[in-house]
Length: 145
Image (tube, rainbow, N blue to C red; front, side, top):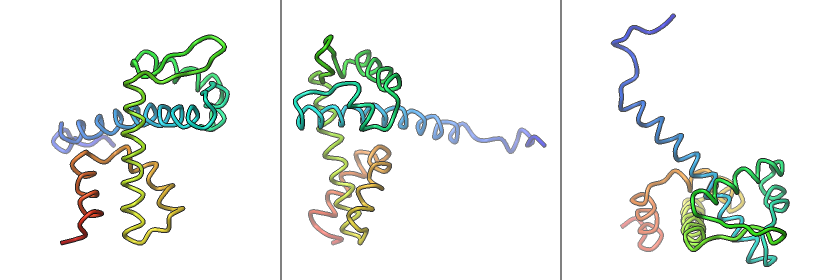
């Protein structure tokens, strides 16, 4: 049974859901640039097959996301040479890595086992604001006081 109009979700609620969907879409790009940066650091290159394997997706899925990274100006690719991050992509990867470390450190500081903290940080890191991250870092640097 449909809800009466006066009980429908507020525009504020719709905005929250829209922001959550946008964050989720951005989270995917962030995960990809972080992984590409890691692959380049580890092996000197980031091939789509390796990206797909490490992300646990099919190669066409990785290819589609890499194409989106290229459209967003975060990556480039060269035939037979793999995927490379642009300056903007490398900067984003650095920010994502730092955000991940902060979230993991906070979770460990409040008693979460490190392996669990690593897993949980993968979801949390994309959804915390810069203000919240700054508070996390302040807590880590100065404690509760």
